[in-house]
Image (tube, rainbow, N blue to C red):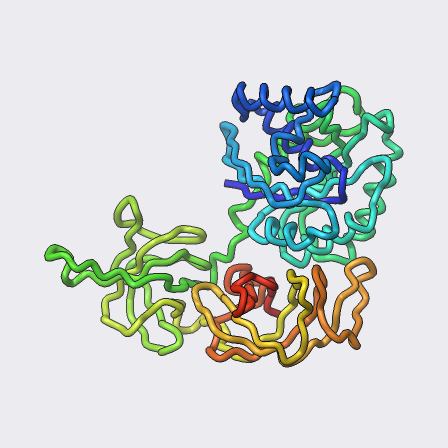
Length: 411
């Protein structure tokens, strides 16, 4: 399965591209297409507006922009896909962060007529900050520049130069026309100078199996399974989702925070016992010893444990209209562990457009990103975000409203 997100500025054609991808890959039903046809006529469009397949909110259709993250699912004979159609407007940057945080690939759209704009750079930086392993720069609306190679080459060069300042490992650049379907599902004959593959072919063949950390065993305990039936009186298992490494029966493991060791007796899945478990499988781990383990504990290797910390140094993307201030108290949710946190220090705020640091910032406002030091009431079992996106990421929660106000990446 490939999870990917779209990003880019307003009106660059993200929703239209996804609509075209769904339509040309025959992943929508006839009644869905007929409904979009009717909606397009009602709006006065002289063509079928495929963006309406993804922009389902009334406010989105009225304004012609994406506001919330919309998830879509489709499959080809080669692979299953989960699409996060994220908004491009600067006001909804937090929604874009939410959609891209779990993606293995990001498609950054650029309008061929405008080239790279401020929001394109902002989203490229966020994709790099969120450690999305694979990036596709889709230069859209090539039909409006007569499919000219020089336009493609200029944008390609400008983005490649900007990407050298970022941590983008795998970059592909594809010229497309989402409105007409050029290079979306099939290769276009209107751009003979382009020798690469279509967008769908790239999505089907990009290698994502090695993106997850299969070295460091990390298993946050989500739930203790103790059936009270006569058949299962001695059954004790620990349910959760594997966050890193490979677990096998017989492996020696250690439990944090107690530090006690044991061995894996068996691994159970919804389909029965399994010989091994790896990310992102959800399993029940049974141990040979009866240990005191509860939700929020971490199962790892004895000689390869995460850092046990209460002082957390992290990059935080702020998602609330109420600014973050030094001295503020929040709740922190890290894997399956919840604690309270105090904002001890704001080291700097990052200017996303210039990548310059502002050390004298008094706080973080909506959509700001900054380096923050937190003190937690309970120890967290962390890895660097660049090493493991699951154990290196957390969310900050307002204890009064219970709303998520920030997303953090451990340095």
